[in-house]
Amino acid sequence: LLRNIKNAWWKAFVHDRDDVVGLDSSIMLHPSVWEASGHVGSFNDPLVDCKECKSRFRADHYIEERLHMDTKEMSIDDMNALFTSKAAELTCPTCGAKGSLTPPRQFNLMFSTIMGAASGSDMEVYLRPETAQGIFINFKNIVDTCRVKVPFGVAQIGKSFRNEIVARQFVFRTREFEQMEMEFFCAPGTQKEWFTHWVDYCMNFLLSIGIRKESLRVRQHEASELSFYSEGTSDIEFQYPFGWGELWGIASRTNYDLSQHAKFSKKNLEYHDADMNQKYIPYVVEPALGVNRLLLAVLCDAYEVENPGKENQRVILKLHPSLAPVKAGIFPLQKKDGLPEIAKDIQKKLNTLFPCDYDATGSIGKRYFRMDELGTPFCITVDYETKENETVTVRERDTTTQERVPVKDLVSYLSTKIAGI
Image 1 (cartoon, helix red, strand yellow):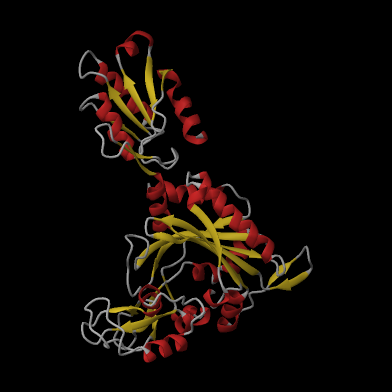
Image 2: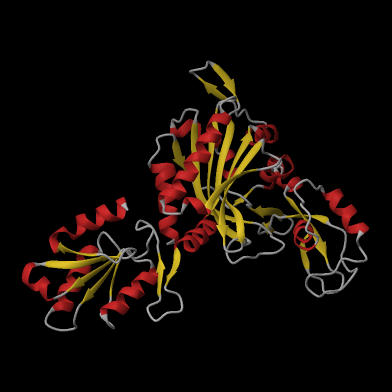
């Protein structure tokens, strides 16, 4: 399922567009990259410690959850003042100790490690907290070698690492995660138009892979929420079981990153626009998506229970057919009379195009239900009529409707259904 999600994103954002190219950049970059980008000085979260149990947690989360106050407009100084004024009455959420909390302090979210084999040559390097900087430092190389013209995008899928104070909510917030990011370079003055384009494009992609519209919303960031590099950000949020949460962030990063890297590297990163006959540092619009967050959203949105608690309860994972890990379950009606051999022959032929699962155990009804729980969109039953006229019964997961389909037409039938539903 995870691989199918990534493939769907890559197809929509790279293969289906003639203005986006792909890249796979390094996880570990020179420390000066992160100094130039501002992450060393600005990539921080407010941290609070308990002096009794030594637990550590986010100050802003504590204020929102325990004091029921909005922190969107709060600076670190505001949080410090609040904790100082209420120091005696605040309790630790872990051990319950009263008056044991330290004032909030900024905590850098980047993981560091040491690079160097010889003594004295050690250098502190960071695991990337985002994939974007690998794109920015390759901007000139991409322009020179890929024959691209502004506006164009560079997309990549890769691991990122953030030293989250509290990893929580299953795979929603983890210290190691995978991102699907794109940096779209455009001429100054056109970034608002492209920003709107990419918000709409991202929303349409989510709908195209089967997520329901009512499970999604777009929220524009307040000025106090903006990252240090952003002039405007909108989040596409999903209604998870624990509430609305960020799924996809679309940020207008201006020309901050390229300007910073040009300054620190002393390299000219201006783009010569032949159509406009001028040089400029391009502006950037960035749609950034966490793979695990999308996986969680897909699973939550697809999960459904029919007739809960009753004898005929049915658990269904209503995955879009293009995302389903198994496209079809193939069942012989009986384990005799040559039906298993016919079913396995069909499976062998279909497996060259679609992942299929052979199942001959239990009643047909139980086999259907097992496939429903896996999110398998189609079940193919080989019965005695198959031996007579070379047709099979194809059952659709969501509606449970069935129809007879000639064996020779199964590939075209499934191809149309998987692409078109």
